[in-house]
Amino acid sequence: MFLLEKLLGWKIYVLKGGSKFVKELKEKTRKNSKKHLQKEFKHNLMKELMKKIKQDMDDKGFKIRPLAKKVGVDRSVITDGIITGKTAEMKLDAFMKIMDVVYENLEERQEVIRSFIEISQNDLNIRKSLVYCQGTGEYDVIANLVKIHQGDRLLNKYIRVYELFNKRNQNIKKGQPLIDEMDEQLFSSDAELQVVINILYALSMHDTFNIRAMNPYMDKVEKSLLEVHDNFINNWLTMFFDERMAYVNLFDDNLELCRQKCEKLLKEANNVPLIYTTSMCCIGESYMFDDKFLSEKWISDSIAYLDKHGVSRESRKYKAFNTTLNYLYIEFGFNLDKINFDYIDTSELGYYIGLYEDKEKGLEMIYNLVKERGSSPFTDYYIARINEDLEGLEKALMRFERVANYHYAKAVRRTIELLKMKQGEVERV
Image (cartoon, rainbow, N blue to C red; front, side):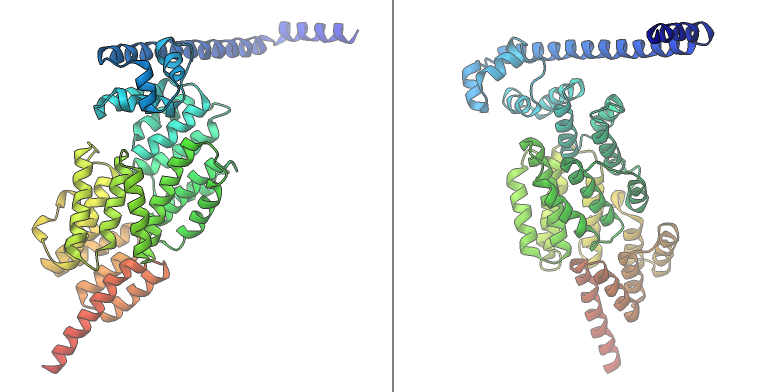
């Protein structure tokens, strides 16, 4: 009787207002159909990609057994993944190892890897793709992955975090506004995600010049890394961690440890231009107050390396490295003709003009910037140095030390000593 009532009730519902139910059912069916078609379409694209790679391997004379031995994978990985198509989708890390040998040309290799990433459907492969693209600076690919997989039940928690990271990558949002957006959200306790989100928090604290605030987040990263069990993902996240720790040690003025971290990354990341060049620039910064010419060489080489490897001149890294080199020239007053004014922040431009061209104009630029963006230890220092204001310099020094940027505090100490000597000479005269 109950079943009959239930059936009759459903029938009445359909007759009276069940059109809503029917519409929902149709919509669900349509979406499922669309997903199935997309899945099938991507499956066919993967087949076509493997056919292309197989053809390229044949054209270049690659044989399976020696290739497998050279790459360090079982021959069945190549046979099933590329030759016969028995494996629907190879593991990204195995695929990349093979591509490193098959395609010597970097651009050609990257294009094939990008294609593989954008048609991958395996959840773990997509997670690997996100961390790989973050490390290699493939921010457009991350944006595409976010669009493709947003709303996916299993992947959405990863997509959300990388979508936030990509806002900083692409200069859409950074510093305090990004911190505020992160604070509004709840994140999974998954170790892999905790590493990524805490690195993003640390970077955002760096953007606000609050170096001391980076440390608790880096401690969380170090603990969470122990719980990331996939080797490929762990290796990439460890490189991100080491890169950030090199800078933490730099700001702490622990220069030997900073250089050790950088040297380690130079060995491990020789195929990852963004991490490799960041290590070069960091070494350059570590020598800034000991040997300005050695510092110049390392930072200049890091910029040249970006150019050599086709990293966009509009990228964050390219602008940041040039800003650092420009600061070196302005701070020590040498090679001023080498300053790249195409890549100079307003604060450093005001600093340069105030010191070497027009004091009032330079100060006005910095004051206007402070009104717009707020002050920082650097703007406090620039203003005090231009004004030859000893009290202002002492306050700037306190601010550098309060945020634990002991390395760049040395610039302020140096200026204080020079100004005291200058004032002493004036008094003696």
